[in-house]
Length: 560
Image 1 (tube, rainbow, N blue to C red):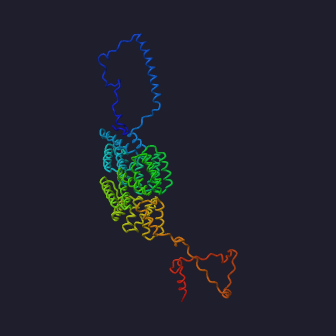
Image 2 (spheres, rainbow, N blue to C red):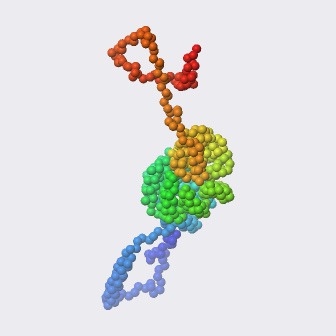
């Protein structure tokens, strides 16, 4: 028998048997003999006693109601809060998520064929692994979700297990698999809102902006409120619509009620502030997120990034170390290593880079593909050719997001293939995303190819967007811009109109008299004064001739 996953273990006790239950044994002995009918005196005494007792009970009830007037409904426990967040499409706090996992583990031990509970448990494992960076839970998630499908196939209504597998594939950066699982659910249940977040993540990872936009719009139709606002803000952010992203993210933060949901919204505001070069605002938003939910460890890394821009280096180092202790992601190790390197602490930098390699290797054993962050490291601090190989593999898997395009373009440049790298770098910037690092990479590649005008524009864009986007790269961006110098006055030469042809020399007076008189203009065609007639445009052959615009060459051509 299927049991709803929301049922609490405490409520699974069998009910007390009622007297009418046929399995209740009949009374035996003296209690089986009916008592004799009461006398009139006994009846009156019982009636009087009953009236007094009723009055006492009524008064007590009134006092109890008055004393408990302020008592509301029972506060939901951690399991109920986690279930409510999942039902609403919002994140649960780590403590509530832990309680939900423990509850479902206990339940499926005695109900191993409960497909909905297994699907809930498997999806909770995915979320826990993603938010704690404990990749060992991905294997548990896969096993549990497969058990759920074995108990009830997806075609028979177990779409939530398929959604869980899509979320697992996204977490492992296997976006094609996530797309397949998600689209399978969408075909069978087009109005199931829970499938659209995983589809949005899959399409974004594949660089399919059109599909990601359509999925975000559909999710907003099916699921109103904070989750839809959060997804819409991310869509606007990826397209470079800063004002729209900021307005939508603020609305999501204002409307969020649960701590984990609120912290996620504040974290998004911090990231937006950081990307537009406002580190003070970013620190304030990350601090607010951590005050709201101390378990939002990603805000520790965001705070560290912004503190670097404010030159509060000691605080930044402490924040990075705390983030890596609680959420050991390889991208944080790369950022901390580059901070150490910018400070001249090469030994500490090497330690972080070694930790990064260990994290990537451990993730690979758990089925997680961290090629992107590893390639970024190799391009700048290791083997650029190895970075190119890793990223070509990503591109072959159709992982063609702006992040992959930017990393591949930069790796090709670092490997000495700037002309090929230009195509990918332009593609990354062409998505519209406002990323200072992308603009910096494109500007450096264009400068290498001696395309100085566009190089200057993109380097200026990088410095203007976020002056402290990287402790290592931001100073290099300013140096490259200074080396290019100011643009020449008047703008690029190819945009200037061609000079007008020289006016013909006036003829002698005698020559004018011997020339035949011009016929009088007809009435149908009004006369045009020679002084107002436009000068004839030079022919294409004359414009493209090497001698065009060179007086010496023109005089030489007239000489015999």
